Image 1 (tube, rainbow, N blue to C red):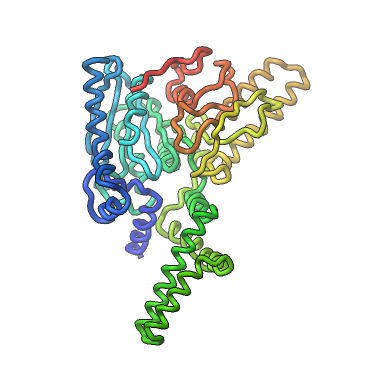
Image 2: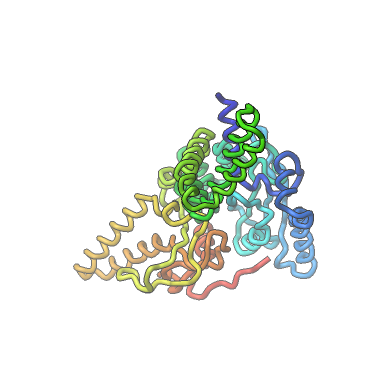
Length: 443
């Protein structure tokens, strides 16, 4: 039974965590096959140069632009589970930070893709920047069996710092997309264990199962492709079995194969396949994800974290330019998450968050009726802080510096970028919400 669960977990993990197939590092097994099918030799070489190019750029900065140079430490750290995680730590040379920010990325990413962004954050924040690749990704070693493995990896990175003497209150966690869920599970456990680390959950989902089903089966063009492929595979197996048993002649089997292949292109038969084979495949996906240990239902976990220790974002386009309660909204195109749509987002499924907003709106109405202007301003500020979880100006993979909050931050008197909002969370003592925006450094 354990063997079957592990096998199911490995299979689902390759779909859920496609970063395991990124052709960086040693190419063998499925990773080798995948690289040969979907990457050119030039693309593989380019990805394997990312780290060396980053180091060379930092060396050039050290010689010609020292204010942009970094201290870099890269190492393989071994976890209690026996896996080795490729880990980097960055800090600006002219700073002596004692606080840390730990970054984790989405299902198709590794930290090599974000080196410039990590370096820029190290230059702009008085923090040590930590990022790593989960087991099985790029140069990290170990097999991913179940979703819990990734939570263990992220939690290990946090505990590694705490055991070195770092105050848990000086550790902030950033998780984008899939890692938003992973980090939430790790941070919630640590808060329960008495380690008050904080989390910034960026554009993540409520349920990995529902998000995956929506991604592959709720979008017509993708579903049609999957149903057609599934139908052809099943028809091939059926016809091969018939031929092997000798129930029909090879000519009859060949004619049936041609008819079966053409049938997926006919609207009526495709609709039948969609309602039968498509429904079966959708149900099979739900079953195997749950059986293999890849559920990640995040909302309750996230809201168990104390409110002062968490913040999240979501991409959404305002329906109008004006809110009766909070004033003018910022509308900037594009503003649509094609990977995790609103109905599947973590933001949509946070009952405590939405109840808090509703309560504040009722308090605001009562304060208006009583003419209590001091309370009105305080309530409005709290509402804006909550409502600015909604960002506009990009999509799922947009750099936070391109995103903009819906409302002007009261303290700044202006709209904040996603970069400023994140910086203000991890460095509240900084000047990231001042009336005049800081001109940030770029590595």
